[in-house]
Image (tube, rainbow, N blue to C red):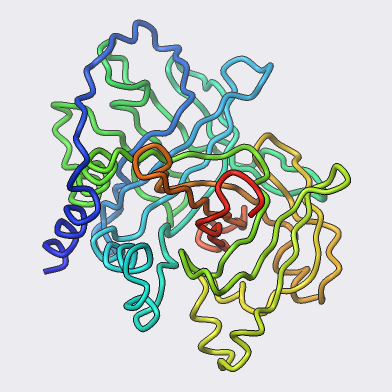
Amino acid sequence: MIRISFYLSLFFLFSCASTTKNESRKISSITRDLNGTYLGVAQYKPGRRGPNKPAIRIYLQAVEGEAEKYHAVLLEYVDLLKMAPSYIASNKLPFIANRTGYLKHITSNISTYEVVPGERDGSYNMWPLSVVEDRIEAKREGPPRVLTLSSDDNLKHPLEGATISSVRETEPQEIFFPKKDDNKSNGIQYGTAKLAYEKAKLESTWRKNFLAGPYLSQYYKVDDVVLALSIADGKNHAEFKLNDKMSHLSAEKRNRMFTNPLSAFLQGHFTATEPRDGMFLFQSGTGDERSKEIVQGRIALFIDIFDATKSLNQDVVELALINPENPDDFLMYYEHPENGEGSR
């Protein structure tokens, strides 16, 4: 029933959209330009809570002035079949979302890496990034995850047929990027994500700029602004706010309204620095000690996971404040849908 509901939802939203066929292009060298975003599959051990083969996405951006060096954001989607009803209700049916709750879970974990050429041709070491005082540094303790490219010359994109290894027990056994005739089962989550992006002509973008404007507790919940970002005097500013409209709610209920309950009751002003391109740190807080402890030390990223700017003229960026030591622990806020690419 959930699957039927999802495809009906797709039809409702995207019935006028058409698919485009991606033709294979020849990539003649194992040394490739990896810039871009790529959809893949995370293969976990059987018995894991949640899908054993969730869809994942990696964003790769070249580091300016450093050959073959990239920054990477790796995120894992939640169960897309279960997410679909909340996505549709939040976007199109607010009278239902007001009762059932707005969308607040899109990804299950987010991590960042510095990606550099490895020891073997076509391999790249993925060193996790960590926060050290006011810097974001690659953590070179223990073995790195390894991105291994396919040696095939005829690929649809540079990561087709590539794999990413694991180093922690909590990580998937392998991440792979499907390739025709690779004899791997991609699973329903990858197929669902691929279909949704193609049918709706969606993109998924990691924004490098600090995007000012109001941010919400949940996707499209426009009466619940909890964070205001601004740019003034040459600095980036972030102000966490308590919403008086929600003051009648119990602490328990308010906690449940956020992606991460730690986001509830944050308050105070922070300035945001950019130690690495597109990666920000919220520092110099004037809020209470609890707010400072939760916010500082996280890497802030602006990602539009379902970017419908070109197809449906919808532009809602997610702001994620990730814990570099724990990919499951992140705060997420949702740009006001009327904000666009600047302050509303």
